[in-house]
Structure formats: C-alpha cells, structure tokens
Length: 286
Image 1 (cartoon, rainbow, N blue to C red):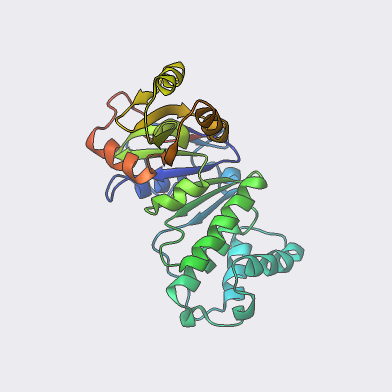
Image 2: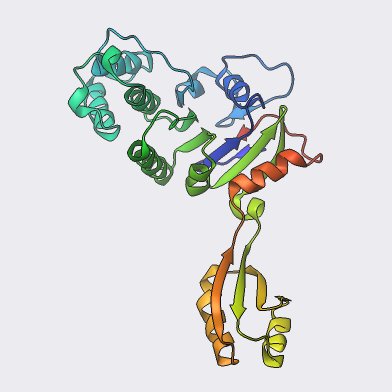
C-alpha cells in the first residue's frame, strides 16, 4: 500500500486493529516484527527523513509549567529550526491554531481541546513534509473540528502529506483523498472514496411509468420499480440534464432521491466481510 506525496490519507479501523501501532512503527517508536516500510523513499529510522516528519499522538501530555510559546520554542529547538526563523514560525503557528492570545499562559491552565490545538501546532514545527495525526479532533468542539479540516486542506494545497487516524468517519470522508481500512493488523481495503463507496445512484419517482419512460430507462440500463426508475453509476453533474430529458419524455416527477453509501456504512460492511486478497500490512510513502 502506498501513500502518495501531497495527499490526505485516512487510516481507519476499529479499536485494537493496529492503527496506532503501525504509526509508531513508521515513526521508529516501535520496532517491526516483520515487513518493511519507507518514508519519503528512505528506510525507517533515517535521521534526515525523521526531521521532515510531524506527529500528533492520540494521548498527549505536555510540560504543564511551560507557556504555550515556551513549549513550541522547545520543540523548535529539538527540530533544529534556525534561531532567526523560530519566532516568526511560532507566531504563525500560534495564529493558525487559535492560541495567539494565550501564548503566555501555562499549558497546565489549558483545556484538553486547547492542548490538542497546541499538539497540532507542535506537529507543524519545521514545516514537515509528512504529518501523522492520531485522532486530531477528538477533544475539539465543532468550531475546532472545522478549523482542523481547513488546516488539513491548506497543508494539502502546500504539498504536505497528511496521514490521518480518526474515528470520525464523516470528517475523513470530507477531507481525505484516499483511505485504507485496517482490521486485525491487515489492510482489508484501500483506495479513493469513489472506489470504496461505489458511484453515485439516483432514484426518480414519478406518477406513472409509461412505455416511453421504460424505453428511456433501458437506454441507461436503469432499473424500473413500481413508481420509480433507479439510475446507477451516474456522474452527478449530469443529473440536471437527465431530469430535463425525463420531463421531455413525459415524466411527471414527484421526487428525486440521491443514493450514496456513507463511509460509515462501507466501513461496517468491510469489517463484516474483509477482503482476503489484501496482504499489505504497513503503508509505503513515496
């Protein structure tokens, strides 16, 4: 399995599936028992490559006696950010994570959500090429989650690769380019959301299914129901034209119902019926 440069990649699975362990292996925090992986084309543990990685763990604990600025400065020092670049970079990070007005406050006075914002800021230090985020919105309110979504899209626009572990499937669905689902240590499915969820379908209900409508449906290989026609594999952009053609064919439409599986539905299906053909265990970054 590969994670491409500059994409937001969702890594999903039930509790105990191995998501956090896989991330720790990739970060060099846990030694693998088998298999191999690479980040930015280099083997795990390569020191220059590790300087290009940012990480927000699911369980974080920071020095409570430090201020937000002091904590960011300490991590910037560990990341060997040049002295002249530290202050402007930290100022920009504090502004981006919404803590500019609290930069002199001690971390011990922060709520869990504020500490999670701070942890996200730490992951951004040094402008890393790859960022691992483990449940980055678990402690945030709706406004905070929206801020994180916007930040992820900004990072992608800049070419940063984001590896996202999250149980909030609706958020994964809204930002990820591709996803993988892991269960019991193995990847059971991976690909784009369109590939995993299936293409868009549309049910058009009408007062009567006439002979003309039946002929129209056959041309689209659509299914005919008692009071509706079900179109599969549509490009959503073509829906207005399709409806206009149905009306021109004499249809008296009573409702138009888009049909789309959610990521949560597909996730549950995959856990019930895993794809036994998938054998990759650890992702490779290119």
